[in-house]
Length: 275
Image (tube, rainbow, N blue to C red; front, side, top):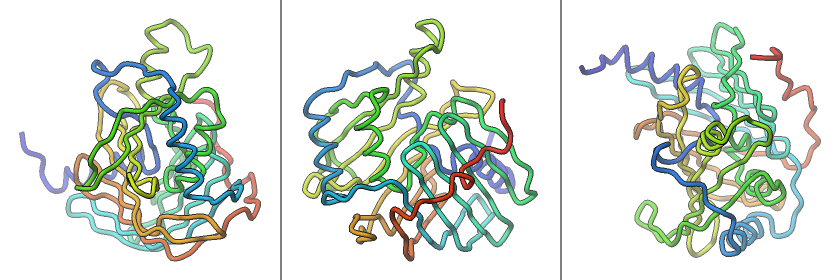
């Protein structure tokens, strides 16, 4: 049955709340295997981080941007603020023409609010992501310093017609029950990262999101990074695009930003504890 334009808009808006900022799963659950970290993958990640930072230590970032949001017949735009503290905490505020949309993630807890201002906690399987999905420096720095992340080298690849190096990252959370549950959590935390083969700057992430009540239903998401510019000594993507099921959902044009300003912890506080 074909989906009407109104239904598509409603569906995409609901998915936006689950994904707005969720780098998560890549591939089909039944088909994935859990790779092991290898030296080539680690070397590529280290060299990518060096290309991004040139040795600058980064603890937090705040970007100002303009965003266009498209979901079926719903077209909105407005200013946006994207904040990240380390690799596990982020806050993204979209002040769209149809109302404000807010997403906060802190560790494995995340919540969102739509134009009505009501806050909603996300399921755990939609919180096993790179919180700093819009700022690759913090995301890659996190996977290199946190032993719960495993990085494997998939191999040379092509992305958008250009040569790329393809990495796959999974995250293992301790104490999460039986082997089947732990395997599922590994699959739910998988992200595919593509690096430009020449510069080693990140060009894309690919993953899936899921309905909060169904971890097995995959909704493909892709994030692309373009137009790198220097902010505080750090290479930063000034054009970020997020696709939902192959259709452009968010088109973000960064206008400026700051690095290492010491963002207040309260910016990343989850208001509703528990699930």
